[in-house]
Image 1 (cartoon, rainbow, N blue to C red):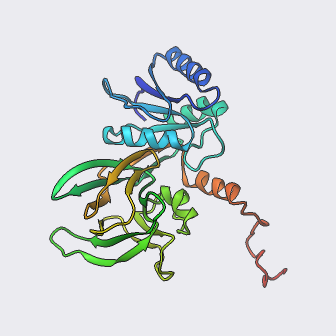
Image 2: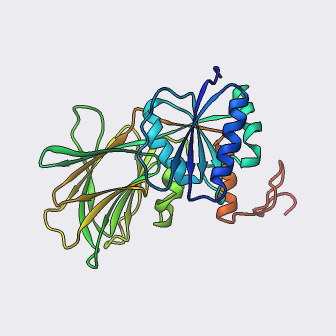
Image 3: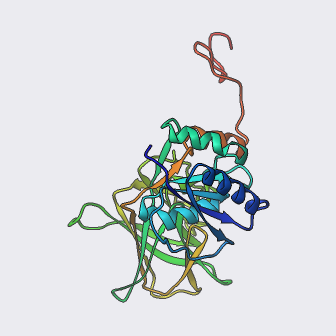
Length: 301
């Protein structure tokens, strides 16, 4: 790891003691001759970089990491996710351990996890009206009482190839999620859990009218194209990472593809992800040792 000279702290004011932890970390960094600049985040905000940063501390929960990733991934800034909330799938560093983990990263010992992100583009009447990047998911959903909406979904592979029609959905909405986002809204809607470092994308209808419409996993190099039906009984909205919203209109087309930039997460590795899975989903069981099986049928069952 190269020398760290300038650090950004994104501090979520909605988290208890976030200001106190921000001051502690800032003071320690400055004692090491590291410039520290704080940006206070209250669920909304528009951060503008005033120079280059070698690292970003995210002080909050998973939502704070999502905001930091969308903001800083284009700049290639690694994110150090300090968890000030409940156990998170992304924010994995306990505040009492931040200095130890930070030093481990500086020595090249802590894992730097590369997480796939998605570029989302909304096209209306042939013109792009919205561009955004997400780490978790892009969700197209209905508003109001008449929630059922109609969506056509295609997948576009290599440049110059023809789109492949994946299907037509009548549902409450559609989730297009990354592996990191597989444990968010998508899993609540019956989607699969993916290893966070896989190169794949989940297409998951929300409460589909036809029960045979099931979640799909497609290669990350493909572009997912969603087209809204021309007639809709409900308003429709696009939500990015649960934080950014854009109103949609009939016949809008949404293009979702892998971003050329990955999110870089410090000490948010696969082991921490599976530890969080076991804890949050209450997965438990005896230890599996060589020559023995806790599933039954083993030599000592």
